[in-house]
Image 1: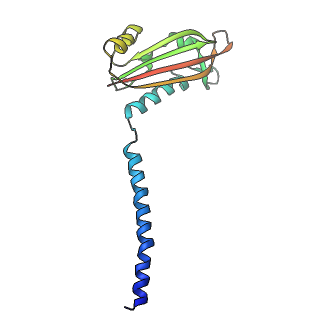
Image 2: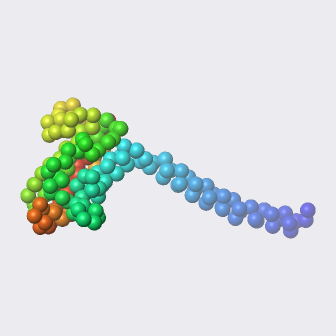
Image 3: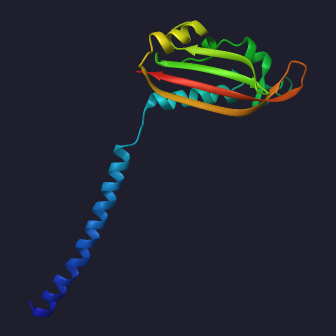
Length: 169
């Protein structure tokens, strides 16, 4: 080996080594971001559950009787008054508490409760939130969305649908 090729080999090790250091830092950043990421299946299930209430014709969304078209963002007030969330929500988790409030022009028009593993009512929701659930709520999910409210006589008014959902530990 001549001195020129040895010198060239040594000089090429410096960029190669710097390149390896950069790749190592990029891999460390990727591993760190994945390691610190919250991948709670309960939280994801709760988000899907509450958002499906808003867009599903089985729950609150208005469905045209003739065309069967569903209008997400338009709440059928008659459905909201009659529905029991225990009948439409089927979650294998025993850790969810959900409260849905319907406001029409800043006036509370109705509240619905869902407490998994119990008959849903204000009493069961309140007892799990305050009595039994004291310090046992691990995550909270709040979501408010502007909506249109379809009255029984066909008149549409504006309102807000507010979801408060909790996961117990």
